[in-house]
Amino acid sequence: MRKLIATIGLSVLFAAVLAPAAGAKERLLTLYSPRIDSLPYVHDTHQVPLLKAAGGAPKRPGYILGFKEMVLVDSKDPDAKPLPLRKMMVHHFLYWAPGRVDQLPGSCWPNAGFIGGRGEEHPLGRTLKSLPRRSRDRYGIANRMADGSAPDWRLTAMVMNHYKRPKSFYVRTKVWYTTEKRTSVSPVVIGDCAQLANGMSYDVPGGGRRGSNFVDSSEWLSPSVDAANTAGDRIRAAARWLQDNCHRAVSVNDAAEACAMSQRTLLRNFQTYIGASPSEYLQRVRLERACQLLAETSLPADKVARRVGLTNGDRLGKLFRRCMGKSPIEYRAWTRGNADANESTGETTVSAPQQLTLATCDE
Image (cartoon, rainbow, N blue to C red; front, side, top):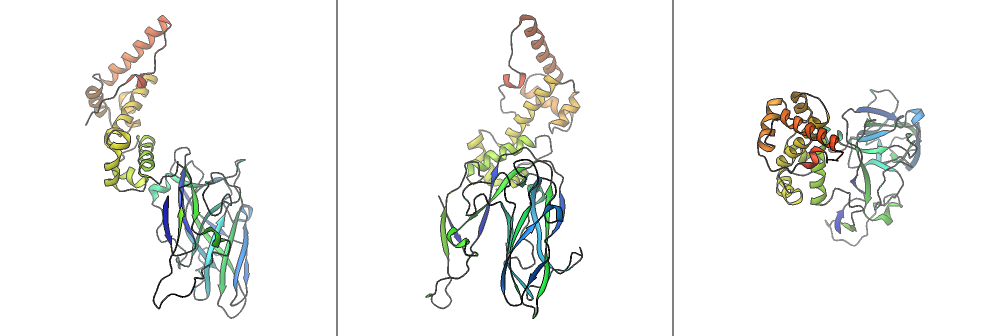
């Protein structure tokens, strides 16, 4: 059970849902709402359809990697400057993709398709800190329906017009997006759920002394054992990240950043949960993959080495002789000799990588 302190009515966490490994391509999409009309000095809450056919939502199913901008503009000119907050105040924007897949339980808005938003704390229409590119290469919010199509979106926009006349405007949204696979994450809205239906009420009870602060608190239970919240969950996520990226030149710090923890925390806990250090574990994964490629393909040692992140055949050879007692070529001949012997006798042998009992082999 976690106790969360909130000074605003809405808090959003992102919890992980397992999905296929990531690619890396992304695009920055610019989306526009239909025209919205607002009367002066009225707190208006607009429920706005964002139709994919009209450029309000992505047309193809994929993954939302992050929001770069959510602003009011007076035209769809790409160079239009955001309307000043002193003239057009934004209380909040809430974005929805009703019916989208991979929604987790435990949210104040269960199965509503919530995907993101902004409030007054983002006066320039940008989040205070965007997800780093490394995280966007790995994670995303699923933007697809159960039938595989892309959903239409919906926008809740609460604004106040401080112009002295009616004003028309558009909401311009810039979103990082990809159609490649990502590990799916889901926004989880937490806090005092009873207040959220009341327009995320921002009134507070009176009676406090001068200069006092009002703090509201609530308790929230992690909705899923797959959520990357506990140390063990994050360490296991780091191990999966190392498996998925073993073909690249990766470091311990890369794995720590991908799983939102410090390198020191990763090093301290990895041995406890996995039984090896991160560098030892990465080496084991690379060795197992190399064994599989040598046994099942005719790729030369240099290509096998590059496919498992070991740069060249010399490095692969040194690793094999130290850990396996054989060169890569000798290992291939050994596995194929066993396969030929089994074929002649009709016996079945477990695949080569499964036969290995890999000792720690420090480079």
